[in-house]
Structures are given as C-alpha cells and as structure tokens.
Image 1 (tube, helix red, strand yellow):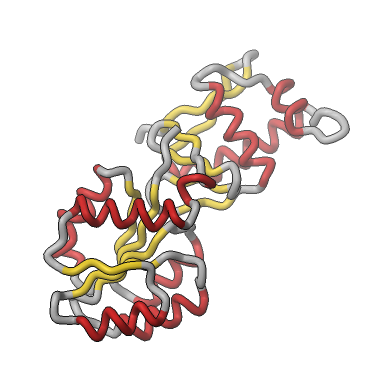
Image 2: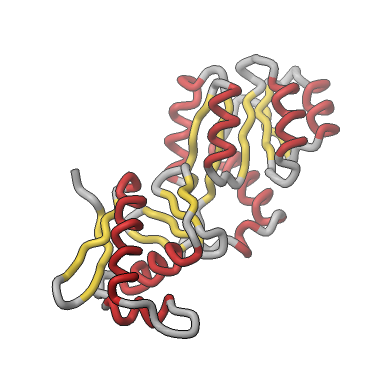
Length: 226
C-alpha cells in the first residue's frame, strides 16, 4: 500500500520549476501547477490536495492569495518558497498561518523532507491509505479516485465497487458477488448491478481506467490504452 501526496504548486514562473516538479513526481508526489488565481481556486474546489506550495520567489501578490486561502481552507497546509532576503515576508506569512518555508536555492531532498514532516504532523500519513492500481489512487475514506493530481468524487457505492475490483487484482468479481456486497437488507438485482457498472464505467474512463466485462464471469479493471 502506497501513500501519494498531492501537491498544488502556485507560481508565476512555472518553467523555473520544471526540474523540481519532475523530482517531486519521482519522490511519490502527484502535483498540479497553477499560475492564475482563478485557475487555482477552481482546482482547489474540484480536487483534494494534501498541501499547497506557494512560490513568493518569482514575485506576484501572494500574500493576498495566502490570506484568502487560509480563510477558505483553514486546514490545508501551506509551504512557501522565498528568496534569502525576504525575511519580513516570511514573518508575515508565518503570522498568517503557513506551516513552514524554504529559502532558495532549493534542494529537492529538503523540500520532500519538509512535506513529509508537515503531512505526518497533520495526520495525513496515518489517515489516508490509498489503494493503488496501475498508478491510480483510490481513497476509500474520502470516496474519491485520481490518476494524477485531480480527484474525482465518487458515491459511497461507486467507491465500494472500485475498491472491490482493485482488491481482486485482476481476478473477476461476479455480478452476484457485487450485488450481495452492495445490498443493504437484500442483494442488488443483476440489472441494478449492470446499470451501476455502466454509469461507473463512463465516469472513470477519463482517468484511463476501464471496467471490462468477462462474459459469464464478471468484471475486472484494466488500464485504458489509447
């Protein structure tokens, strides 16, 4: 079982962070990069991020953004990047409520260590155990799934179906088994299971995930190859 950290990097100079984001991926961190406030708010509303990495080194009005971020997402950890001379800025951001800061030039090992420490203290490592399959993460507790940094919200029933298929590890799950698993007082009918799978199949297709039907046997999940 692998735990993936989902990072949102806000910067006005994405090119300077290309090597950094590549290294973050190698250290098991999924990430999205944003340089526009509106885009960032949309990403935060649509996806579940474990931490925001806010770049002050490249300039921009990050303080106003940070104040709004703390007001709307008070429990979301924030780590900032600053230049060596920006002492007053770091103090101001600490007073607003950031978790920590890093000073350029950055070392990826230190950045990862800071991220690990912040998320460990916040309980992320202890509480979010994601099921992993073919690079896709399924969060049973949060009823959501992702391939990359963006989360797709699921209903509890949809999440239970996918979790079951993940745990089958390539072995088919029959319609009868899924019906018994999903039913409350009595099993779901075969028709109800088929309708649920049809809808779920369409929902997860953009994540490069497909639910395949094995005639007379049941369902399995496979990566979608274009």
